Image (cartoon, rainbow over all chains, first blue to last red; front, side, top):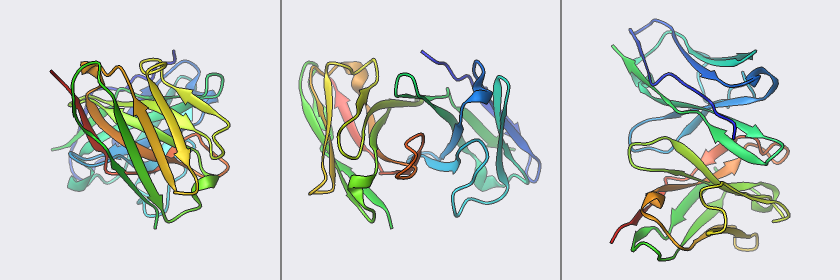
Amino acid sequence: SYVLTQPPSVSVAPRQTARITCGGSEIGSKSVHWYQQKPGQAPVLVVYDDSDRPSGIPARFSGSNSGNTATLTISRVEAGDEADYYCQMWDSYSGHYVFGTGTKVTVL
Amino acid sequence: EVQLVESGGGLVKPGGSLRLSCAASGFTFSSYSMNWVRQAPGKGLEWVSCISGSSSYIYYGESVKGRFTISRDNAKNSLYLQMHSLRVEDTAVYYCARAGSAASAEYFQNWGPGTLVTVSS
């Protein structure tokens, strides 16, 4: 089955930029989606279709996808961005959904 | 406003059964694929099952195939997950999640708060 690999943790200072990667074989040919999950809460969609943002998500959240790596970028990081982040894709051949391993973002 | 509310979680012994429900409101339920996603304590997200709006297409993750059954009642705006032969490793918070749009089922736009299922003797 398809595997999406994320770094376990990323640390970033306030007002700096955090980049979270999601690696997978030829992932650039697929659509990747990203979720933010704070402790004790349900996940929230922050980026879909590689780089689109749902309404209500700040423009500080952006996404890109090429080759074997998709990236979620959080600009001007705030304390409230501290959370777990998951990438996700849909395998059209099997009809299955795959989540990445998850990255904990810590704001220093 | 889209609302999804799960219910039916609880403590069950290994080998037992449980039925989860998800009540949906705020959108045309029959137009959207619906999913169950779970999260074991301290672990990541795991997709469990998906059902299309008309129930024509149903898919299961490998870890639950043959044990879990997804279904929906569009007249009642409700999604279900019947779980049999439960194992300790099925212990998790189970989320109900709606597809991104009526045209795209590739991602999960809305999530419920989740219901905890604990499998333990």
